[in-house]
Image (cartoon, rainbow, N blue to C red; front, side):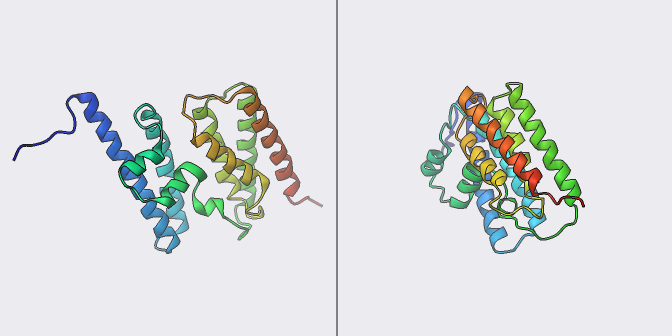
Amino acid sequence: MREVRLWSDKKEREMYDNFADLFAIVKTMEKLEKAYVRDVISAKEYESACTKLIAQFRTLKTALKDTVPDVERFMETYKMDCPAALNRLLVSGVPANVEHKTASSDSGTAAAVAECVQHYITAMDNLKLNMLAVDQVHPLLSDLVLSLGRVPQLPVDFEGKVKGREWIARLNKMGASDELNEIQARQLLFDLETSYNAFINSLPKSS
């Protein structure tokens, strides 16, 4: 039997290695989602692993933007039946326990609130400085949504969470080097300012 090579040069080999990495990330995410749903893994372990996989996916997606412009089509081509991974990586962009978190405890509230304020201000300042590339905006929104999920008193449908997830889903469909246009940037800044005010108003008032 003769060995059959998928690649003919170093560039092709690197491409197929990246394909394998993308395949592995999607499959791993699917397994992780199922493990979380079945309570096989703790919320803390799940969030850590999920956040890492999302970051790896975003990095690899950027590297493969020319060869894999459409991840859904890639999954169809290689017969990957991974709906949970597809939702987490391309639609939600944040771990499930953060996305659906409800009030449970007041421990750590002050630190969580301070973290949210910091992420809000950073995101708004960056937009005002015209830092509009997807790879500049996306991590800031992800950090914000994650931090909002750690504030116990905020409901699942808090507008900052909802708007944040919507923007993340929108950015997930764009390339890393793409930039928000003037209208998009203005709308995002408006959404951030509005939800920031709602966030501040939701905090307990000192007597």
